[in-house]
Image (cartoon, rainbow, N blue to C red):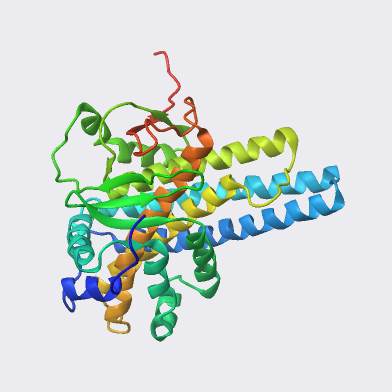
Length: 365
């Protein structure tokens, strides 16, 4: 993996950007954007609490060497509520991203992060997050934007479970994830919407994000299928879409398993649970970062965000992408290259291009 960080990514990003020079975030509808941000934070907290509940329920069942039917029914009821929470969380975070896709925010932030990484060298998710989480001076300002002590602790735990690095490879930002049991990191490169398509798969993926948002909004079934060929290049919104579909699949599988066989107990930590936490934490950080970025660009008479907080919000976007990629990589290892409704990969080194398949019922006229 990458060498240790050589300098502060927060300071490097701030220096490259310059004081008060924030990425462009217009046109944005503030009413829907900030309402979606609030809903995403609320539902993410519920989902993270559900993961804790699930761990304690497994521990209780293991100690009792079994569980009553009433116990199993309660766990299933909690799981179905978590599935509903995930649906609302996903729609809110994807709706925010959809608005941002029509601004120059991704282009601006990718350009600034590219220059920052040229100064710092490769940066791990843990190092970048530690800079933000350990800054007590602006803790209250970040908490006011949703990064409460509870959320901060949950994300800190998630970051500790993944080995993900942000680096410059081939003059582009690259996310590298080394999953337990593998010797070579999986890689994905971040690109902007202005980059020309390199293949038919690139052209097919252009309208994919809006279709995913529509599917989640209308509660249509979605899943990821393998598509061979292409290069592992993603727009930031692509990672959000992949993470959303992966989380939905994981939750559906979890609920079905509870319906069929009840709550399972494990020796040690369940890798699929780790992946779920990474996906939720990644999407949450992205939503928090976008909310902070909007408020920094549109300060009010009452509140003007400190410059450090504005920088932290933009960097949280990248940490979110790293966690999303890390979560999908964990699921890829668990899938073992299987097809169908599982997430699979074309090689052990790079994530294959994936197409989100929207399952639509045919209607005869």
